[in-house]
Length: 334
Image 1: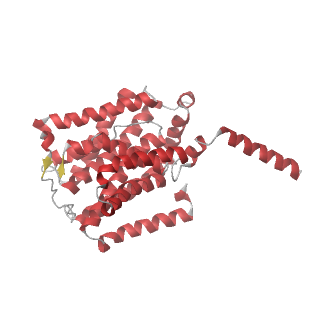
Image 2: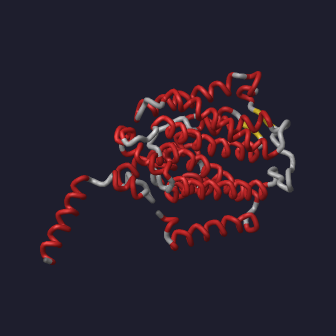
Image 3: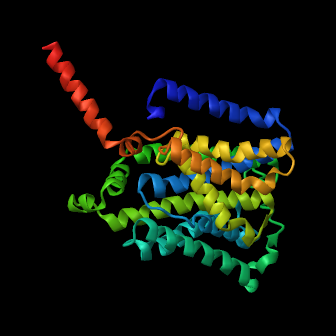
C-alpha cells in the first residue's frame, strides 16, 4: 500500500503540510471549497469501509450524512461542542446499526436496492416531519458556541478542525485495514461462504462496517451543518449518494489514496469547470455519468486501485499466461 513506502509517506506529509498552509494563502471562497472537499472526504472514506473493505453495495449513504447534520441542527442550542460532535457521530452510527441489521442476509443488487430505499425513506421523513425537522424549510441559525478557543463559525477554524478529523480518520482506517478486523472484512468481500466456514462472524463484522461508515458520515454531517449554518432535506437525496459512490468507484474501491483522489476530482474539477464554463452546473450529473462509463470501460479497478481489488479484476487468462511464462523461463534457465 502507498502509505507503507517511504515515498507514500512523503506524499502524505507534503499534502498535509500544503493543506495546513492553505488557510494562510487562500481567501474565504477557496476555504469554503476546501472545507467541502474535506467533508466529502469523510463521506467517501466512510462509504469505502462499507463497499471497499467489506464488499457491501450501499446506495443510500447520504441518509447517514443527513442524520448527522440534523442531529447537530436539533441539539446545538442545548449541548456544548464536544457533546454535539459526539451526538452527531452516535446518532448516525445508531441509524447505521438499525438500517444495517435488517439487510444482513442480502447481497449485491438486492442490498443496493434496499439501502437505496432506506435513503429515500430518511429523506422523506426529514421532509415531512414538520414538528421535528421544520419540513422542507429546513433548520437555520446553526452557530455553535466557542469551546476551548474553537470558533467553528470562522472559516479558518472550521477548515482546520475538519482537516484534523480527516487526517485522524485516514490514519485509523489504515490501522483498521491492516488489523484482524480488516482482514476479516477482506475475506467476507472475497467469499462470504468461505469466510463463514473459517469461523468469521459475518453478521457482527457487517454491522461493524455499517457502524464505522455511518459514524464517519455523521461527522461529515456535523461539519456540513456548521459550515452552512443551515440544513434541509434536499441536501441529502439520491444525487448525493450517487456522487459519493462515484468518488469511491473512480478513485478505486478499497483504496484509501484512490478514494482521496476520486474525491478531489469530483469536487474540485466540476467547480473549476463551473468557473470557466458558464452553465456547467446543469450538466454536472451528465459529467459524472460519462466519467463513470469511461472508467468502467477502460479502467474498472479505478485510478489508484487497491492491490487486492486489482487482482480480483485481473483476467483469468492473464494469470495463466504469467504462470506459463514463468515455467518457460525456469526451464530455459535450467
